[in-house]
Image (cartoon, rainbow, N blue to C red):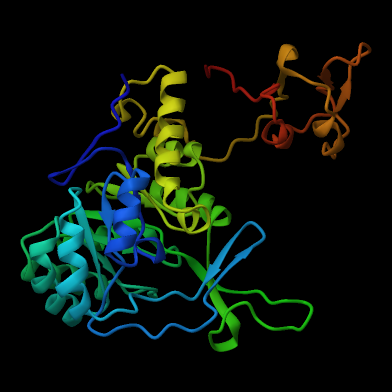
Length: 367
């Protein structure tokens, strides 16, 4: 039996998947659908002291990802306090309430939100080089409510510096990353930008930012002692597994449930469970941080030609087409590929392109 539960800052999640603060969790009805869809906890859309005025259009699917100009909730705090939070609290899952943005606003809101929440997630938005707003926001939240306080960080900052500053200020955990930008895209037919914001700028999310998010989570995990929730570009189970393997306690998702609906949460959970069962893991603790000691401390320069696993090769020739060193060809039988070790530069591209696990790059001493 695979145990997918997570103990996190006094809360127990039935699984490690939850919404990220955003459109998929815009109100109590959306939260209810997320629960039905299989989420392990609820993270509410960020609110501030006033309702947001959001440019329109504000969301678009683009090649490799997603763009948005979404802000905080378009409903004011009164609506949340009177209608949404009470209904969400009755859904039976831990509730992490999203708050923003200045220390003064967070202090005011935290007091009011506390009766409906199990933890607070602070969005300090996009910052420069100064972590002072993060420090002040954490202190304001801790002074206002006796709840665990999480800080959500953006990728456009020095992660270790801000992570340590948040921890020293009293943050109980971190969430990272937010979307990346600004970015720009438009329709070539008429030159009209996809976003209705000034200059058509938006913020990038979805699969395109996953490697960026993974790096940020790794840097945070190795910089502080407080727990981390990973978010950014997670679109399939293996992405969540990778987040856990670099040390995240749980994951949040936003773009995928926007595009696929609230059933995505349960789908992601099922894919995580399937991976664990196929690889003999019985609990998340067995995979958490598993990759940390595999990440090299310095550049690697040894050329290691891939190993061909003949029984997996389908002779599709995809690796041959993309080998710029002309080091791969079919053997005389045409049943599998062979590597010319003299020509191979050990770039690794063929391994990542193979759809059938027929190529493997193994360094000496590795399993």
